[in-house]
Length: 404
Image (cartoon, rainbow, N blue to C red; front, top):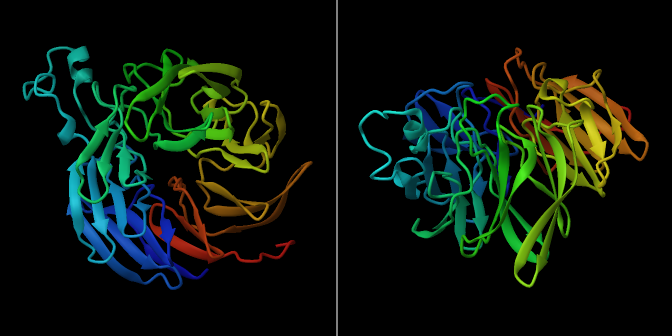
């Protein structure tokens, strides 16, 4: 254990760049962008702003996006900032709720009907939960209102470069814009649920899968998921030039979508769809041609723990009910999986092989106290960064011994 720092409650994961760790923390009705030295954990500087309010599963949410000169942060209530890494001041600030209100729909008068209420721009039930996407000289985020899907801002000035059309609402959509290349064309993939958020998972309609041109904001193609998908959270995953893997919890399961382009016309086809594997919070990972994800019985999956699939959707192996991770984060490095148990704070190190995983080591690294240590992990220069609801810690995992 290299260092430990106290943090406010929440789920925000760290981002690491050039030997510095960035965390969008939250405490005392403020959001705080904090910058730490990776080697020592010493806090170098912070940028704060007032953001009053509370949410179910309260606290921080989002991973900041860092480029060479700027940190882009999105707070849970919609505060969007570009922070200069040299001066530690905001270059510009926008708001993903207030800036996209419609003068007719978003009246100051109380809504008379439920459809009228749902049409209004609002903070999602669990807050805005996404990481801004840097693309060339723009940064892309997703207000997901009745009229605006994605928005691209000029990185330097904050001026709006484009807005996409409707791609679904943000009541329960917590997916970050996903940049990929399909059929040789760059595109941003988004998932969103268009229905009344109070519908049960089984009653919810399919989510919308949308592809947007990152240069212009034009919607290239759009298709529904083959089954109900109430709360999109994990990002899609490109597994081939023309294929997207999509998974979700609450009985959604997983699917493989094949995308085609012919003379400017786009098409999609579902190659497989099943509910055996259901990742709830963390995004799937493609490693050496195989798909890895964490799946839970509580989310409808019959194959549980860390699960490995091939490109045809066949389950090659699973760690099973004896080794689940309760929504803790995981990542893959050097042929090994680092998986954190979200309730116990235990870190597990698993070796990957053709025949299945091997538990190499495990150790309790967080005093999670059963309090949802769900944040994404970060790994840089052999240093693994984890957090729970109270502390963020850095662990030296470089060159671990094969037998733990």
